[in-house]
Length: 197
Image (cartoon, rainbow, N blue to C red):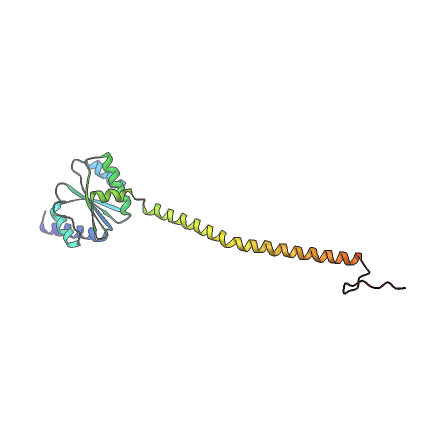
């Protein structure tokens, strides 16, 4: 590889490291081109799975501030540069490695922090961002419904109480006028009138 090509490859890898939210290092020894193509399809458009040269990757990682140890960059290496959801990419790699044991997840880098292979597997066990957002939205909707019912209950209870008082007042007024009409002997002040002789 010519010096200019190497410089361009290092620049591209450095840019990939810097523009990705995560980088997951794998060893792909023994995988066929068709299997790597299948893995790229599984990882989706938010993840770039690139077969890399170890010496160039060491330089690019150093320039980007990604702490991949030199001991990790041995053998045939490929890196999943994740622009989307790191959980989804970790799940894709883990699931693919289960059915294709030749794929070995070695290490990773996520938001300024190095990840071991075990930490990547734990990351893969998390719910995806969309699932977590859905759960949060469901919890918030339930809380809002409960709050609305809580606020609505006193208002509807007060409305029912006011309606009951209004009906009671109307019944009392109806009873009083019916009783006054039935007993003409009472004066306006409620005292019985003296019988005229």
